[in-house]
Image (cartoon, rainbow, N blue to C red):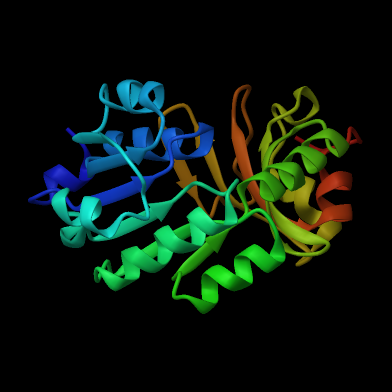
Length: 229
């Protein structure tokens, strides 16, 4: 049972565009307990979405009559995931806002595309390909990083798999060289999440750390060095 179902009637969301990004989004929202309406022009994409969407429909996501017939105007959220065609993306976003969908997230492929989406009413614009490239770049430059969220050009939040040279070490000595320039926000240990871990917390094999700081500090923090357990 998804989290949304546990809190009462599931919230409704429409996902327009079932490429790799849209299908993944729709599937995740379904797993979280949302009532998902999935729309795409492709017969194959719609057939695959039928396995996880509450309603999967083949058609033009910018067709206002079609969206009304699918009761999309009763959706709490909308996701416009078709970024390849600028016109289709902009029109679908415009129609969702015209129908009164309160929160619309739209995928953009360029800064200009994103600006157009914002100007016609998109509540949030995302750049999944660009963001994926940023995360990949950081994961390649720092081998222990498994995910990365940029906060500024040279600062971010990184998820690190604890390297072998961290195992058996306390956080305090590991973080001491960075004072307030780097912080460990949490440790995930199996199914347990340790928030705001103290300096005496000893790291174990398989731990994952969520670390915030500058890119050079995160890089230096994760590299092998002498540490006091």
